[in-house]
Structure formats: structure tokens, C-alpha cells
Amino acid sequence: MTAALPDHAPTVATVDSDAVSALLGYNLKRSYLIVRGAADEALAPHGLRVVSFTALSVIVDNPGLAPSQLAEALAMERSNIVLIVDALETAELITRGRSRTDRRRQALMATVRGRRVRDRAAAEVAAAEAAAVSMLDTDEKNTLLALLTRISAPPSAQKAAREG
Amino acid sequence: MTAALPDHAPTVATVDSDAVSALLGYNLKRSYLIVRGAADEALAPHGLRVVSFTALSVIVDNPGLAPSQLAEALAMERSNIVLIVDALETAELITRGRSRTDRRRQALMATVRGRRVRDRAAAEVAAAEAAAVSMLDTDEKNTLLALLTRISAPPSAQKAAREG
DNA sequence: TATTGTTATACTCTATAACTATA
DNA sequence: TATAGTTATAGAGTATAACAATA
Image 1 (tube, protein in one colour):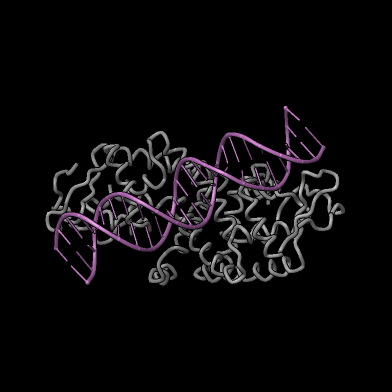
Image 2 (cartoon, each protein chain N blue to C red; image 1 turned 120 degrees about the vertical axis):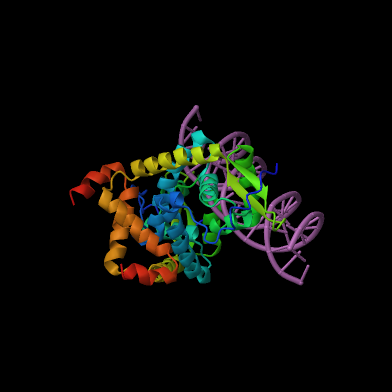
């Protein structure tokens, strides 16, 4: 279907839409993609992506947890956790043990190497993030982090946050 | 490969990792998903998703622009714009005209209905976003938006932002 | 030759259903 | 019967290559 020819509408020079660029979601997405890109670059040399780094971190800090718990913590489906845990195990960053009391359940543990990789990667991700938002000073970064934390905090934590 | 059984590591109650929850990217993603979910819910009754609403808005505010310009504005590939524009055209929210001076080029124009739908949807998305971040007061929302805008602003705009 | 819109395709992410082994 | 891990699969989102029409 070809419509009336709008040649009187000159080819647009700068494309923009106030109705979009004023939206919080639009700006959250753009900032997220920038920061995530920086994190991905920092993680690539370690053979990690953001998901696998996050999974590794959660395992390091919660030794013995089960894949199903990991899935819940990462807000992912159990089925999609499998390949991520597989990759971490193949890279010898974690081990898959079995709970003795419930033999259905696995107990994920970071290896020594896994802990070392996590610590280094975490420092480099933090540095990459800082570089990506270097246009903000320290106070501004802290303010941003505090505001974001409150958006995603459970309702039960909101009251505590208000009362400082 | 089954490893040593870590039964001494009790099943974890609260799963968390400071190395992750302190990261800006992690919190940006969580906030983004919350706000985007709210926007999706607000758009569903209009038969729109966030991408198609954004495309419609850009077309409304930049009449006559070409799909390739739309692709650039949305940071998407030309090939992936096609189906989005198809859907907007089928819904009679936009028309695909042809430029008379360059017959390769299409000129996208919103219909009257397209403009009306965009305006209503934009208001409802804004309201849905506001509800999703209702734990922040007006000043805090403005601060958040200003900080996010600076993260994604081109470097050329950073100096201007600093000088207020 | 280069560009616009288009198709086909592939790869990733995410979500659902169903299987197995255990409980 | 219910749950944990797994597999297969389907749907989005995103990226590349190649083609026809046009410049």
C-alpha cells in the first residue's frame, strides 16, 4: 500500500522523539546497555559473560547451594541454568557435588581457581563500570546506585529505606 | 564429575552476592526489567510492545523519515525494522509512502489514528512508569533521569551538561 | 558502485513441556 | 504425588549475507 507522497516533509536531519527520550525506561535501557557492554569486555578475557560471572559469584558467596536456588537468585529458569553450570564446571571454576541428605539435589562449590577468577573479574568489572560512567563524580554514582537499589528492593525493605 | 560432599555447608537460606549486588550494571538491569514490565503492560491493550511504540513515536515526531533512519534512531538493523513497520502499517497506525526524489526511499507517516494511539499510549506508559517507581519522590525521579541521561549522552554533550 | 528495502538465516536468550531419579 | 536436574523445543531479539530496484 503506497500512500500520498509527503515530499513537503523534508528528509529529517536529527531524528528524535521527546515522547520517548523523556521516558525512564528508555534511559534505563540505554545506560544498561552501555554499562553491560563495558562489563562484557572486561569479562571476555576470563572466558566469562555477565550471566556466567554472576552465577560464579553467587556460588562463591553461597557455597553448597543448589542449581534451583541459583536459578531463583538469578531470576532464570532451572532449564537455562544447566548449560551455564556446565560451562563453569568444564572451566574448572566450580564443582557439582551431591547432597548426602537429598540425593536429587546438587551442591555447587567454587574451586580455588574459581574464587581467584571471580575476585579478579569482579575488580575488573568494577573498574570497567567506573570508566563507563566516568562522566559522573563519586557522589553522583553513589546516588544513582542508591536510587536503583530502591527501585528493585522488595516492598518490605522500602519502609526501612525511608527511615534511613 | 561428582566432587567432595559439602554437607557441612548447610543449605543456604538467603542467596545473595555482594560482589554482584554492588555492581551498577546488575542494578540497572533489575530496574530496567521492572520499568519495562510496567510499560509492556500499559502498551498491551493498544496492541503495542515497547519497540513498536518507540518506532511509532519516532515516526509521529519525525514525519517522512525512512526505515533506514528509523533503524539508526532505534539502534537496530534495517532488516529487523521491516516486520515492525509491517505491523504498524497493518494496524493502520502509519503509512508507507515513497519519496519522489529518491524512489528507493520510503517515507513513513503516522495516520490520524496513529497519532491518537501514540498520545494515549505515551500518557499511559508514563503513568505506569511512575507507579513502578512510586517509592521515589519527584525530586528523586528527576535526579535519576538526569543521571541516566548523562550516561548515554554523546561526549560532545558532556561539557554542556557540566556547565549546567 | 553504492544504497534502500527486503528475505533468509543463524545465534542468543528466554520460556514451557516432558522425562528420570529421587523423595 | 511432588521436586531436582535435564533435555528438547519454541519464541523472541539481534546480527550477517545476499538479492532486486534504484541511484
